[in-house]
Each structure stands twice: as structure tokens, then as C-alpha cells.
Image (cartoon, rainbow, N blue to C red; front, side, top):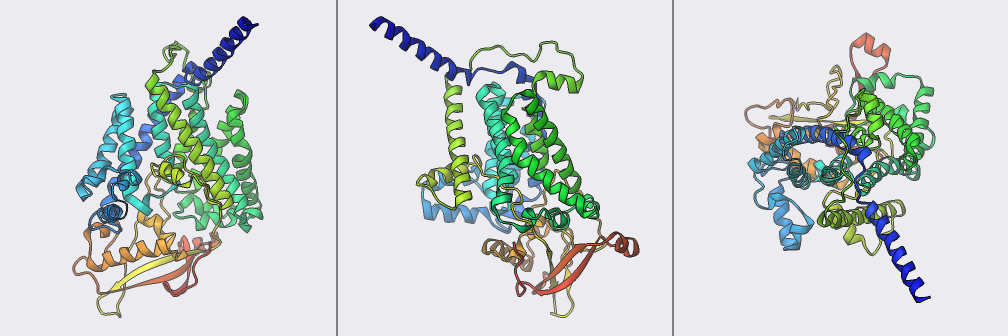
Length: 497
């Protein structure tokens, strides 16, 4: 009896160990997908770094809107040595314009190296550290869901490059699932009447942060088609994400539906690299057979990997990351959905401070009107000239521009200011102060400075209600927009939501 129990115990331990090791065993059928994903990730990283390189000095440099060196000094005074952990960034060493821009250009260089297949592991680690540093430096200007999506995908890419194991593939799939499913859930639980009434797309195209010309045409489509689009959105966000974890036919269906949806968004919206990265994540749902069928490439066995397990350090690091990601993302979802904070809240915040384990909720509420702010300056308080932004709606006859994969961060953030939220009013006040002192770094973020000499002593901000022109109005006047004067900002009703 004792001998039987001993043999049974060893058998159970063997099953348990085998099951655990299966999590780390490479999946040869996804090796080609892993290689292709890393190439696309390199391109997205490159676009993200180049985009922020031209803006970071004006946003967070010593003479920018929100100087990061001041932020770090305040964090040190409040937190002491804990600040290094709670604000993870290389810029503790130097937060000058040159350091900020050098980090962005260095990240772009490492992206090129990854694309060329040179120093892939080192390049992936370097890009994560550099983008995390810029993410923290950008503060409110880089506090977006696509920034954390890129950070988590980039960190997981380090382990994917080492081995496309079952566990790392699951973590990528979990990331894509969270992005899609959580966005659908929060549309429902937000209580937003336009989502509940299937009318969200009646407003979305003209009220999104930076519409392009495709949005104008989509806005002219029949109302019934907008309502069908809302229904399709719910289908793709609430049902299709579960296909990710089902057998192969369902996974391929999830890819097809998600790609179609992302293509529609790209055709009607400017969301920088967000949709491109979502498409890239779908690659890791495709096995080698599916990819070769799409590429019409014969199987020569070159992409197959040996079934050897990764080393112990790799397994321990990946296990720790998996625990942290699952913990932060699930507890974060609970807190955001219920409004209740768990005792583990400090740990979750610490993990998410590194840009990973985030909760995603894309457009949970919909604006029904568009309020635009026009910033003007004057030397005498009588004659006023407008500061011109590069991409946000301003001139009525200016064609809405397509800027993907670039994100003009200042233009984008101007969309939030009409809410008059304290965080938005704070940075906007600093922006206006920069205009009054004639900061070259801040002025470089604009399309045109009407005061190239001495900055004006007077500034004012007017609020306008913008809407897309109808097809007939566009034909008659040549204008893409119509507008109505509201009043002097901030002495106007805040935009809600």
C-alpha cells in the first residue's frame, strides 16, 4: 500500500510538472507569426518615437508646458528614494531638452535595428526602457491607452523574441482580449445614452478628437447605417474577443472581424498607431499554416523552432511578469467597474506605473456636440490674431487631415479642455503662460505664431460649437465645418461628458 501511494504521488507530481512546463514550451506553429509581429512592432515603435521626438521638448522640456524636471524635483521632495520606483524613468539623470529628444531618437534607432534583425533582444529592452521614460516624462500628454498598449506589447515582445512559448502567447492574447472586451463592457456600464440608444455614430465622426476627411464622408451616411455600425461595434467588442481562446476556426474568425473593424476605424478616424498595434496583435492568433496561405509562401521548415524549454531565468522572469499582469489587469478592472478599491491598490498602482497591466475603455461615453477653443493674442486689446494649430479644427475651409501614425499631442489634448476638468485647466493655463512669455519650444508645437516678434501681453480664448457641413453646405461654400459662437472661455458651460 505504501509503495502504491509513493508511485501515485510521483505520477501526480510528474503530471503537475509536465503541465507547468508546457506553459514554457515553444510553439513551433507560431514561430513565423512571432517573427512577423516583431517586425511590425519595430515599425510601430519607430513611428511612436519619431512622433514624440519633435514634440517632447515643447511638452515636457525645461521651457515646455509641463517641465519634467520640476515634476521630478517635486516627486523627490514628497517621496524621497521611493520616487525612483514610483516614477521609473531615465530622466532622473538629466531632463534637459537634449536628453528628452535624444531618448526619442535613440528609440527610433533601436527600432530600425530590430527591423533589420540586429541585436533584437537588446533593442527590445532598450525601446521599452526609453518609451517608458518618455511616457512618464510626457505626463498628461502621454497618458493614453495606446501608450500603455505599446509598453505592454513591447515588454512581452522581449520574451516572445526569446521563445514563442504558450505562456507568452497567452499573455499577448490576454492583452488583445482586454483591449477589445473591456472597451465593450465600459460602453454598457457607463450609462451613456448614445451607446444604449445605438446613436453613438450619429455624433462620433464629427466629435472625435481629430477627425480626418474620411470622418466627414462617414458622417453623411444614412442614420440607419450608423445604428448598424453601433451594433457591429458591440458584436466585435463583447462577443468576438472570446473567440481568441477558442479552437482555430474561431481564432481566425476573430482575426477577420477585428481586422475589418480596425480598417473601418482607420478609414474614419485619426488614432495614431492605436489601430495599427491592434492589428499587429492579431498576427499572434495566426499559426504558420494561415500566414503562409496569406503570403502564398511554401513551407520550407525554416521557421520551425526546436522544442527545448527556455532557461530557468527566462521561466522565472516570465512567470513573475504573468502574475503581475494578471493581478494588475483584473483588480484594475474590478476597481474601475465597481468604484471599490481593494487593499492591494498600492501594488496595482505600482505595477501600472511601469505602463503594464492597464485597463482599457475606448470611448465609453460619446460627446454629442463639439466645442472648439480658439486662442487669440493682442498687443492693444483691440486687434486680435489667432494662434493656428496644425491639425485640430479651426479654419472652416481647411480639409481635415489624415495624420496616422503620428499623434500631435497638443492638438489632441485641446479636445479635453472644454470639459474644464481641473487637470485639463492646469496644463492649459501653463500653455497660455508659455504663449505670453513667447516660449520657442511651445510655439514650435503650433502651425503658426501670429506674433513672431514680441509676444502679446493680452490673450483670450473663445469657445465655438463646431459641426460638419452638410453635403449641400460643402458644395455651396467649400467649407468642411460650420460654427456658432458660444462665449469667452472658461465663462461658458463645460462640455459634458
